[in-house]
Length: 212
Image 1 (cartoon, rainbow, N blue to C red):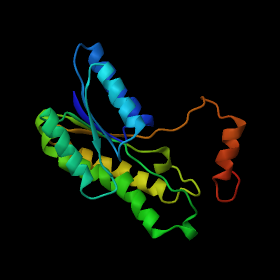
Image 2 (spheres, helix red, strand yellow):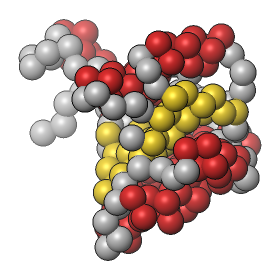
Image 3 (cartoon, rainbow, N blue to C red):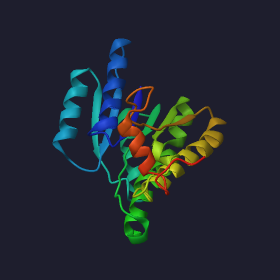
């Protein structure tokens, strides 16, 4: 499996890279993982070391997903190293909370560039390689993309746009055998909501009470 993962140095991105390497190792194969993060960091260095410890071919790459050129560049660098791609995980994301009445246009544009536009640009750049391989794309969405939360007035819409973008990509790329999906992580403390979770849910409602 030759795969590129953005936002790889920590959290979901790191866990994804390691899972790919472990699954390949368990199958007696070798994963080739292009681990992309915004710049050099101890976290990215540790990830590369851990991947290589699992027998993977780890390629650390640096790229700011908020720029117009970095997504295509890192895809090209990965394909040059690996000779192609079977998988793309668009995971890099940012958040700058704040009330919409005072929100800065620059912050709004930054969130949409990283959280939404980068997924499109990565998919666009990887399209031919994924078509040739019958590959797959996974984008990290969020429950905030389908549930409104005060002070996340830019983050929520940017993730909602990712979810819709993935649906359109799935329709267009699916004709060429490319699977496109989104995952929307959320904290799941259990099947029954705690009192704290209930209180948090109430606070998210405009009138601070349940509607009927």
